[in-house]
Length: 253
Image (cartoon, rainbow, N blue to C red; front, side):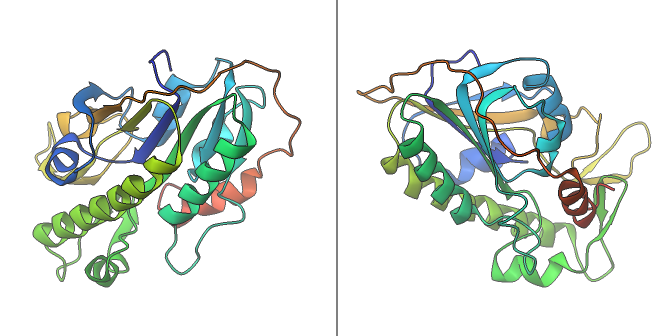
């Protein structure tokens, strides 16, 4: 939050290595160590207990319920009204539309936009064929005999491609310095320790490099937003029951 940026495009569960392979975005790519191995830890350690009244948080992530009402100037919560029940997620183009709207509505605020991809469920045609077969429990999914590790890696890579295409499309529509980063990484069959079982997704408090090393892409602009801090807007409370329903659909509860 102390970086020199006007907008952060935060893509969920994106590993540095897959981002580096797939990204064609202009800018300077570096890496960072995430503050946790899942979104809940990221939000708690990055935002909770702080006040960023110069920032608007646009989010498709249900862990938004962790935030106090006065953390940001405003929160644009997409979890309640824009959840695609068929795909079991908020699609990336919905987040992009909200980002464009927030830039117009809040010309004097920084924007943090939290996309849910490349986090599963997988959106590609191939990815959809394996998503329903994954068994969700214990903060991660487990593979049936019909799904291989290479299948998961392919579906995950295609999710990375999908969200990066959306990011590439939205960047020209927003002004100021932009950072593209992630809240944490992803396990794609790596062996865990001390029990050498394969891990998938992003279990809480598992601190492997694949879960903590994330991209940090800086895109500089000749024009900057005139950022001003103002008291938080009055808004309706975030519906915890809706968020809990979404978390259950993703296997967290």
